[in-house]
Amino acid sequence: MIRIRALQSGSGSFALRFVSLDVESAEYAVVLGAAGAGKTTLLETIAGIRRATGGTIAIDGRDITHEPPERRGVAMVYQHDYLFPHLDVAANIAYGARDRADARAAAELAGAAALLERDVRSLSGGERQLVALARALATRARVLLLDEPFGALDPPRRAAMRRTLRDVQRREPLTVVHVTHDVAEAALLADRIALLDDGALLQTGPAPDVFAHPVSVRAAELLGAENVFAGRVVGRGDGLVEFRTGSLVLHALADESPEGATHAVVHAGEIVVAREAARSSARNSVVGRVSSVTSTGALARIELEVSGTPLVASITASSARELALREGDEVHASWKATAVRLC
Amino acid sequence: MPTPRTDTSHGRRASFASIAAALAASILLLFLALPTGSLVVSGGAAGASGLLRDHELRRAIALSAGAATIATALVALLGTPLAWLLARRRFRGGALVEAVLDLPLLIPHPVAGLALLLLLARDAPLGGALFALGLRVIGTPVGIVAAMAFVAAPLFVSAAREAIARVDVRYEHVARTLGDNGWRAFRRVTLPLAGRGILAGAVVTWARAVSEFGAIVVVAYHPRVASVLAYDRFTSFGIAEALPVAAALVIVALVPLVVLRALRVERAA
Image (tube, rainbow over all chains, first blue to last red; front, side, top):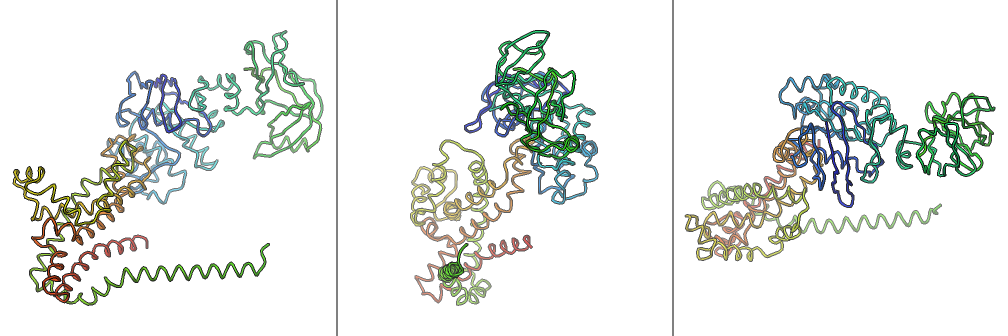
């Protein structure tokens, strides 16, 4: 288990500010944050590469705050793999291993056994990352720190690497702290999510809880929410609350709505778009005009204008084709009260 | 869209600039290469045969090469950690350290010799202490090594610092998380990756040390190294006697540089 308390670490004009985070043994934690939020600084401070200027870090009850990196029992994989160019693949993997058997086992675990005879310069981006993972696993460290490990890979390789990593983490089992700016990656991998912004943690918790209940507008933005409305609660009743934003009134579940909420968040994927009004269980239903349709692979992003308020919906590209949506078309958009998160 | 006339005038201006740059470069290169080239051409054959027949010249060249090798080894041993510090760490007094490193490059070498004399003479505190330990510096090969190290050390530290700085520090970080302490990470990762640059720095340092005259002539006129022997023969017998010694010294100093360049070309190919 990793227990971080009030951690501070400086890096030029940037500093981590009183970061506290618990990661259980064998848990996969994802630290989600934008570029410059302090994700790499956090990992490097856990690894001992950067000095903590305040706070404590403990692994399995042992305070390692002032231990050198080699005595912390952690291994780290960077986005740019940093394979040692003067060593071949086998020597890279064996670098921190106790013996050849450990190196061989790690190579097999990471799916890099077929690469052992290769020169590192001949490897593709995905292969390099597998070797970097095998090299970290070969140390038999129980804690793995991953700094945007898929950032340099194309989507198919990223998906394959993700599967490999999750599989390895569960089989060993390893405690993982993985930092990324990619919300989809976090959603696919994380048992626990921590939102890091400008050197401070905004929110931590089990992944489903954090996705369901962002504590602030910034947290919702980091979680990829496309629709964030400023406003106020104007009414309650029948288990629902009414939240007014401009000329729109949104309905949300009263049980999950904090007193004095100032913002409502609706994920674009929760919004249903239709050509005609239909009777349904959705408590929120509006009429708007299409202002743009953008296709992004299997999905289409539909931007609507509803009485002067912009609204973004994400539907499948095939649905967008069937609806034949064009700029200026009038459409009906609806979503459930459970899809509205007030914060 | 630019008119063809403008294009042509740009083209003319560009070609004029190229010709002027090539002319300036040629003048400088000739100025650098001609004196050394003519010295080797005039005295090269006599120098080469002198190496076989002239015992005094052979002894002087061996002393120069041996002292330069020891000086380079000492400078590399002490200078590599300093180069690592300068490349990797920002620390208070760093600018002062760099200024100290520049000193030998900025002062005339006979003045450097006088400074060493002041410090290492028998009646000076450090020289006296060393003498008490049985180590005489002035007028001995030890003094020659000291003078060579003094003038050549900045070249090594500068080259090694650049070579180390070119190695991404994250290789060291990864090595640390893979179980290495700082020294092992340097030895197993940084040193091999910076090795070629450090070796190049050592070769240049050696060449500079073997060619040193100004500081050595003050600290140790005897035993005579090749540069002092060339000067001695010039002042005693004239240029004809000095030429073979000078040519032999130039050849010896150039050999490692030529080998280094050849190795680089081979690797690039």
